[in-house]
Image 1 (tube, one colour):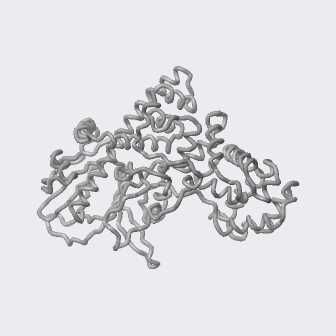
Image 2: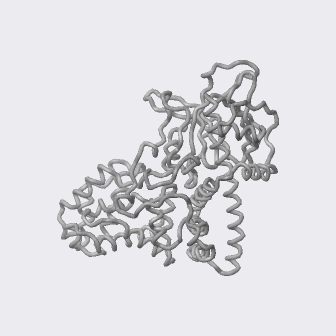
Image 3: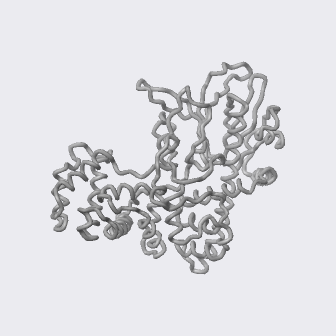
Length: 475
């Protein structure tokens, strides 16, 4: 994984830290392959004396592993002292930390044939305060925190645990009169209704009507004893307001994906991909002549593993869209500071095929901050690869010792790494009160196409990138 800063390292980092405004001379050499990895790693060690930065980077790497393979992510979090790994703390972690894929949380909770995962699921649902809520509103609150997995057996495990908890704790005057099995049946019916009413793949005339829902659900003996008005209220609440999980970093990227147009659209939506920042620059196409300062406007989207450059346009409805001009994985990029007679605050980028693109930042500050974010993303990628290789060695040892790669892996890391003395993530805990567990929405969670009046650079506040302080679940 390579990012070759061809400028003098001391000059570049003095620019990044605003200690010097001296521009760096133009460099003509191009992409130079993976053999420069060791050089960049040494460079990172020299200029990174802040332990807190490394600690937060390691935390993000653990989250990335969770968003690919949840068991391994939890094992790494336990190994590095971010959590203790017991079911109660893992459940609390899911509810109070951002940066976790809602879908992967659902997959973890739905894992069957594992007592550890069952214990986490049970503790997870026990955090839910459903005492006074009608069943559909309780399900709505419950499903804010995760996306149901696709496997029917996994869904059944989660719904069963929820129904058990609801039937034991509810004081609702209607639903407290029925048993756990009835709650289980009706909960499934509500989930099916939500899918039926809001699936984009179902034609309007084929959607379930209120009469259909009432008739179908009241066929069960115990449900037939509940008042018709109860089912009608459930139907209309769900019809008017879809049950959805809270936004996460994947939602951000999906929103951006929906604004892409053209033939060469990359598939951006991956559970591990986070938007770090986006900024506006201008592409230099002047050759050896001066170019209008506002010509060839480009939007730069920096992710934790890739870079996309796009041209913005607006349709007749006033909606902004992006035509992708460049997209590449960070490991295949070579990036330098660029300056010429006609270019100030420039950045030169090569991909692996030596295709060149020159960008001009609006200000020196924009150039510096983008290069710092890019550097941090590259260091994260390289550190993640080292963690992956180290874990592969561990996994081979575990295989030889007949240790499974699920719960036993988590317990092994927990018991063999002295984690009681390592809980120094630098990230504040959140009290497990019901009010603090509920995710809230904020404008920062919704990626909107930038208009001409917006700033030239914007952080993605869900990304857990180098400029974000981790806190509660304020998506």
